[in-house]
Image 1 (cartoon, rainbow, N blue to C red):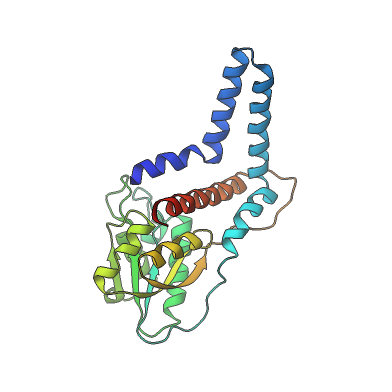
Image 2: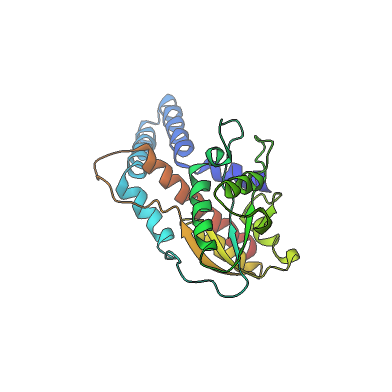
Length: 245
């Protein structure tokens, strides 16, 4: 189910979808269906331009990122800060901090900020190896956290969790029911829904905000990537709603 979900979501990502539309346009042109071929071509180009612009990426990303504000509230009593996994690359030369993806580093940095808002909080780090790495993402995140000053005994790992739902399900057997949840701002609405579904009371601490203003006339691969991440979240929310709600 995990890999099936990944494959299905890939098909509606911007570049695969645009490529598919261009292929359809060529096929229709070959079959002399020129009106439909032109429509598919124009649709492909319009999608590419819209999703690569700051206007387009901001329009679809901001509704996700504006759901939860930056959290600087003190954490009372015994506390658990959970940082959701993202990605890393074993092959990159350097320490664990250097191996983390930009998203993972942003999440971990916010997680460390949240630790300072409580008293001796536990830090929960999650993520499996991803198939391309020998080291699990949770272990790499732990090594990076230690490099950045976190005591090893305060860190709890969930190295087998493959997605957000599994991360949420992994907490209950450990007796953890209340957390300060750290993840990317665009991912936070879906993550909060999943943790709530699993009976975990989570206080949102979003980071990695990507809906930023830019020149309306400039097409940028970064904006396309931002749009892709937003679309991924919408697809994930739809899948979760259809399957569990």
